[in-house]
Image (cartoon, rainbow, N blue to C red):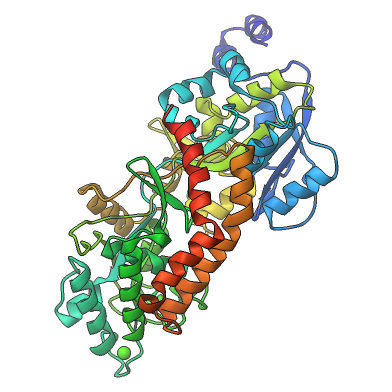
Length: 516
Ligand code: CA
């Protein structure tokens, strides 16, 4: 390719020198001389792979490899789609999407997928470099047999959720942003009683949550834990020991208080049932006062409601100090998702495939995966990829527009936070700046990979345990049962259901993976 273009420039004369440079640069991504098509299963609840995504077509132009979607079924459930594919008896060349980690790490050691370390070391310089840069991240995705069976999707950016409060309501009532859990209680009580929306009715919903699980997050204000990762109800690690928040003392104290706040009318009475439109509804009707939710999307209501709700101001404030004085933001972006893609054992082109996967980690491939096609969806301005105005100013959210073209989809790639900062408004940026001045984030539990025995223990017990935990916590918050009198029975029941066995299995997997 390079030789051909040099010949062309000689024939055409000096005016084509620039074009030659571009062609030579782009030809470095070419994996195959003759176009090659590989079958792919790539599933997420929002999409399956589309052969005509502009991002896919551009990758095919640059690498010579096209992917052909063979994802089976029409289900929104990625695990179900994976099971359907397995049941068909045929594995496509590449298998990816949501929840690839548990599946690749279960079926890889059984021979369905190929171990990637050697292929990567030999043929994937970009992935290799990232593995050297982030050893702990790549270590966390290894299977129980120590092999790496998929190329992951790595996220970028630190912050996820933050505490938000109606600062115009605070001003109206002559209050300050709450500094600790006691002040938060006072502020929410004032929101409840003193009519900050000024309509003469006691209709305010002081604390509300778009995801009901966020009500559990409040236990951190009493030194409890609700999760160790960006997945709700997850385990966490304390000094190398695996624990579960819902079996901890801080959780007992915290949930006792959350139940009390609920009884006092400080928490949305419909917190478990209102659903994902809670934030939209309660903010646009000038009813909600305090929440814990994503920086960018929550701050965006300052723009969208500016003409609808008089004086509306919803701002992030630093995590209130707990009863022991700890300010903790329990949620953050996890550095690596259980998503990405794997190479099937039946794939006849493993070398070409890993080179293709490596393309997405090159500078140009990473931009393509994050921003779309240069000149179509973004332009390079001062060395930065900047979205076209029609994308930034569209009525459709930027992230939905990107999924439509095949960018920011769950192939193995490395996200670039630059894609998001461009549509993060000044209120969110001010909040991020505020959180950056403190040290509120905590280490995340990146998960473990089980061996066969550990997996069997987990599969046998965990679902029942979790179901029981969630039933009890809801009954306690709603006040239909009493946590104080229930607690000892609850802990006994968790033991009977096998929680200690599950923790032991996780601990042995954790020790093997992180302590060796
Ligand atoms: Ca009112």
